[in-house]
Image (cartoon, rainbow, N blue to C red; front, side):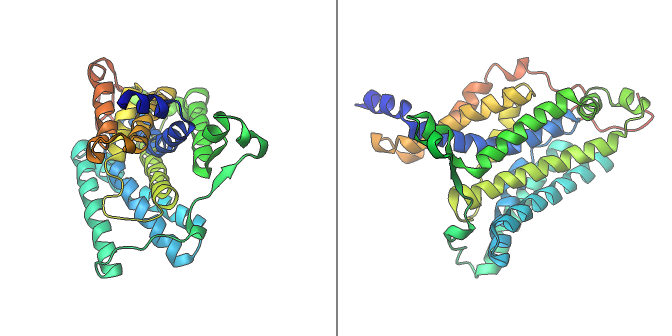
Length: 315
């Protein structure tokens, strides 16, 4: 019975459609984290940036009655959280892991407090359809068996994420800007000698990671859930970080890891009728994350200067 259900689930378009939805949720912050890591700044604060973005998206959209203002608000909120991380890590040369943990804790407390004072502890209501990110159906393409539902009936953010994915791949490996980012992450002294402003590059990369994480948070609250609740991200930012490591700090590798972890989420959702505890099914994405990383982290080499504060004039 179990294997029959598993086979039916694995061959269903619903599963792979859901896998791409959750994969997109991980991909947005993962791409931001990849840029930050490539510039030499460890960013484990994507969870907090996503959470802040998720709240800001709902609060801003409700206040302005504008969906897209809500999305922009989420990106700004994520960027501001990233700015804190950048100042602490780059200017004050604090431990980047500790800074990221502090931001994650701060974001959880801040969003819980804001929701409490906003609703007197009642919680935010579900969003109306006008404030939900829309799905797009690509006409006749959407009617193609299996592929139509999987690829051509997706939320608009899925297609935006594909453009961002292609853009970052091109930026990092086919432009002078990308060369500078990679140089700063590998050998900041040499990049500084060549006239590259190391601090500026790192600032821009860290803030970009916050903007993309905020966009991921907006996708979660305005697209997937349609509501904001306490700790709504539930570890999505950490899974995104795992995807960067598993993807060996490459754009396409990170995208593939996000799809794998998204498939785990899809399985957890689609296998509810097997009789297995939903709490146990909910662990599938995290189990897949552990399995993917076991034995791989040791063979994954981050940028040489990743996590190392840079002091101009030092060797």
